[in-house]
Amino acid sequence: MRRLRQASNLLLYLLIPGLGAATPLLVYPALTAQYGSTGFAAVAVAQSLGLAGATICELGWSVLGPQRVARAQTAERASLYQSALATKLLATLVGAPVAAVAAAVIATDYKPAAAVLAAASVATCLSPGWFLVGANRPLAILAFEGIPRLLIMAGVAGLLLAGAPLLVYGIGTLVAVIFTQVAVALRFGQRVLPRLSAFTSGGAIIKQQLPLTGGRAVSVVYTSLPIAIVGLVNPSAVAVFAAVDRLMRMALAILGGVPSRLQSWVGSAPEDGRVKRSRQSLLMNAALGAISGIGFAVLVPFVANLVFSGTIDIVWQVAVLGGAILFAICASRGFGLSLVAEGRANWIALANVLAAIAGVATTFALTGPLGAPGAQLGGLCAELVGIAVQAFCLFLLKRPPHNTNLTI
Image (cartoon, rainbow, N blue to C red; front, side):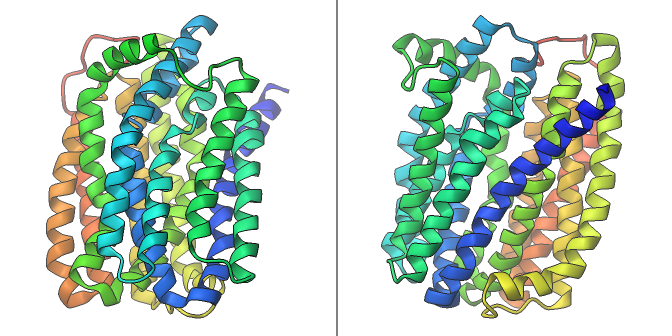
């Protein structure tokens, strides 16, 4: 019975990001059918900038928060929730306007729609999914985030097919964010808007998380911003590169259910068993990446033809490079989870910095002459450097005294 419950729980964690990945699949065919590759390019630039902003503005809560919530009592969980919401709200008020302006500048078409979508994408950092993962409440994520967002995006797709302006994509994204935040707060007895005291307590935690937050801020340069970089260096390559990148991110969203479940599994382990579980999670993530990367390389040309209404062609070289990047990201997720579990989370920042330097340099150098494959080689270089640094920190550095708070 116990194994059956664990298996069903894991399936829920896979279903949740699966729904998240399905939502763009509802919108992109309608978007490209009405606005073509130029409309998709504007959306891709906006989402690239918005997701980069969201990664920064979530301030490390999605990395360190779940394992802390998994070990916390009810009262402490409420405090963590409020502190996270307070600090992320402040960050969003700064990050959303910046992303909107950048999208309007870089996008070559549909600039107002790109600006609104970029700002709304930054606001996705307010998602309480990290909290529900730590509390091991996958059904709540499904009910209050996964299904509502799917329905809202289905409505957006219908509006686009009916001739609505591209602006509705950004508006729908923001509506989904607000609904989830309010619904989760009401369901679990939290305040929709945090008290002033939450800003103070949250600020103290953020100071402790600052090295990781800084590292994640750097990491977005090679994980979320490459589409914007391609838009600056070689605009004609944006549609192809963004198409593969978006499909890969959808696949990663589905696969993210495994490391999400492992966060709670590793974080809740007894002290003497945490290292063993973290090493097991490394193998699980690497195997998952190998299988998924091969499948992605084989299927993505056919999937792209359906998703983008036949307006964007994916050649085999681009597909293979996409599969290699997907494998590298899955493996890197395993290393990151292990570093957090073993009290070395701050070393992730070093890995992110070195990976960003390598990734940005190669992306700028190769995108001009090679187009989309050049940008992909830059991303692959970044991921491999990040894996190498994390592996060094995990296996070769002296293990620190055990810290049950995981540097938080």
